[in-house]
Image (cartoon, rainbow, N blue to C red; front, side):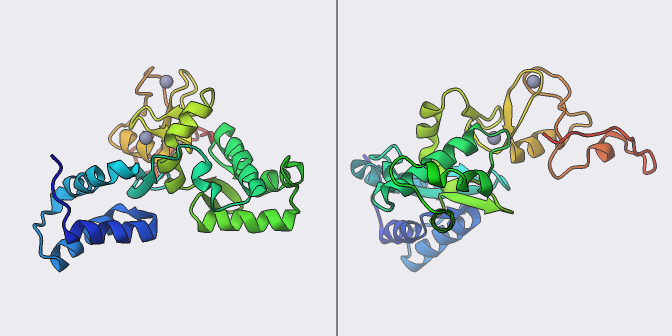
Length: 257
Ligand SMILES: [Zn+2]
Ligand SMILES: [Zn+2]
């Protein structure tokens, strides 16, 4: 028997719905605020229970609050996910047919890329090859902006990747529709778009997972095959971590992966 929904649960759900996705610390703050306003039991470590109560009531509506990780900084995020629509049909009511085709093609580029990014040039080159209805470049630029505003894509210096919200919503869709290229992170076992690959055995790891996993190791080795991890560890200078002496900077070249 599912626990009772209180006004605090309803308030929490309404705010999350209006945001679509919220960062972990924001979500924890919201949890506390909702409990305080509606004077219901609050414990800071009971957010997951609080959410699973809401989820048990959302189930008949085929909706769910899901937790995911930002591939940029590794922080937790919570998003309200529609389970009834498991494909890009989630987006169907908001966009025209050729906009959806552009999104699908952009997603193809991102997922099959080495680093999880597609350049705006490559994406805009697709605009006049759309089967549904060709788009002018200017028009496509505008559509990309909307995808970013709606948090399906995120953009950095003219490079596009999937937004955390998109990954949380479409993880299953991507894993089953891109079986040859979509892979799961060896550390957290969720879909990895921006990732590093082991040159020896081919496993992938999210950048924040790489950072966390190798933090305490003087010599980073692959968790699967134990070979030397040849990619740069993000947020860590490889030469510094290898030679603790202040002057002993080795000239070992590091490759970008
Ligand atoms: Zn991971
Ligand atoms: Zn390996």
